[in-house]
Length: 349
Ligand SMILES: Cc1cc2nc3c(=O)[nH]c(=O)nc-3n(C[C@H](O)[C@H](O)[C@H](O)COP(=O)(O)O)c2cc1C
Image (cartoon, rainbow, N blue to C red; front, side):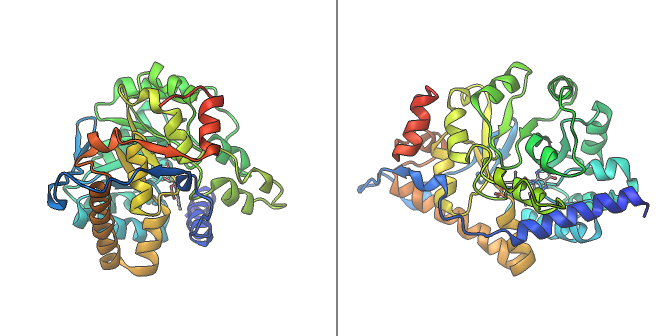
């Protein structure tokens, strides 16, 4: 392994290690400031609830997916294999982590292709950064036979990362070019800093039809990258970004034209249901899934997802909404902090 390959692999392992170390209980999640209105007399039975959904042409039997994390090192090859088995057994889509490692160093490719090998018929999302070339994006898709392509946008992470990128002016044109020239759905995603209305407008203007707002509240890359800095001197940015709940409010006027996906700090079936009520078509989880496979194992992770989905269906009954369309339109009540953001930003529900 040469020096650069080694650096990339070590960085990915660092990210996994730091992510697992981050406190899994966020006490002040913005999801706690979003409330459902309980309905006492449901009009249907639990077994009539249907939470199937779509991301463009892709049909999902459940509105959950394993979001982008790993690949690019020996350790994360093993993790990808486990996640792929869980995704295959539960029938939910899975995204791999950034594939730049494999594009630059073909000897690392099998840490991504293992996902297709372990889950030959599942929905798998490739993942690249916004600086990738069109040719690189196509190679990433081909390598794992991807059903969708995620393009991550992660400017704060790059800026806090000691060895991160400093050039962003090509991102917009590059994303536009990729969207125009690949034949599978392109999902532009954040990495835990959330998306504003302005960001979503740019994405819509350049032809992006699917966006994962991936907001603040879960895995925190400002803290992870700060921990990798020699002086740990950018800790003050640890609350940077928009929470997932706020991001979904910012996304409200786009839900008819784009599929809005939610991730970032989703820890319970209730959090996931709130994302759907705020307009999301599906909900992604990263760290929670990592914790499941690394600390509890494949069988436990499969059972976790099955229970998670079952409990979402139970909550559907409690709000008297039998499918995603009805949940999307379910009335919710906000705490003053969220209401204030909504007013100041002129976002109306
Ligand atoms: C260990 C780890 C590695 C990640 N690597 C990537 C990546 O390579 N590409 C990407 O788009 N997002 C990456 N993410 C971000 C997640 O996809 C997601 O947006 C973020 O973690 C928020 O979700 P969570 O709170 O459920 O973890 C990574 C997350 C974790 C925990």
